[in-house]
Image (cartoon, rainbow, N blue to C red; front, side, top):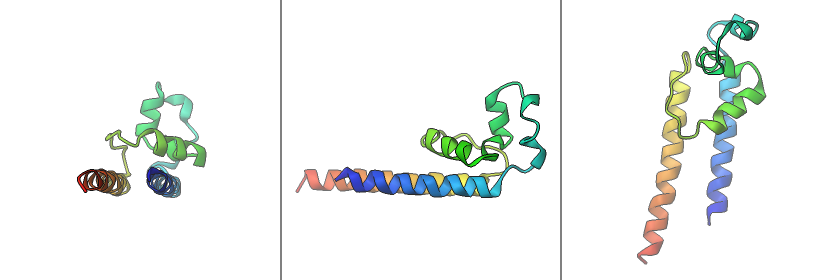
Amino acid sequence: RLRTFVFTVLMFMAAFAHAYFITGPDDKEVCNNEATYSTKEEFNSAGGFTCTRTDSYKYSFSNLFDFAMPSGFFWIQLLYFFVMSLLLLNIIIAVICTEFD
C-alpha cells in the first residue's frame, strides 16, 4: 500500500528539485563564488543549492521535513511544504480509516 505513496512523494520531490534548479539563486554570482562562503549552510542559505541539478535534488530529498527557508524561494518552499504535508496527512488518515473498518 505504501509503494504508491513513496512513488508519489518521490515524483513531487523531483518536481520541486527541478523548480529549485530552474529558479536559481537571486544573485547569479553565488554559483561562481562558492569558496567565499565559510560553511556549506551559509552557501545553501544564499541559494547555492540551486547551482546544479544534482545539488537541487540533494536539497529537495534531504530537507523533506526541514522547515528552513532559504532566501528567494519563499513560494516554492511554501508550496513544497503544503504538498508534502497534504500527502503525509492523506496517508495517515487512510491508514487510520482502514484500521477501524
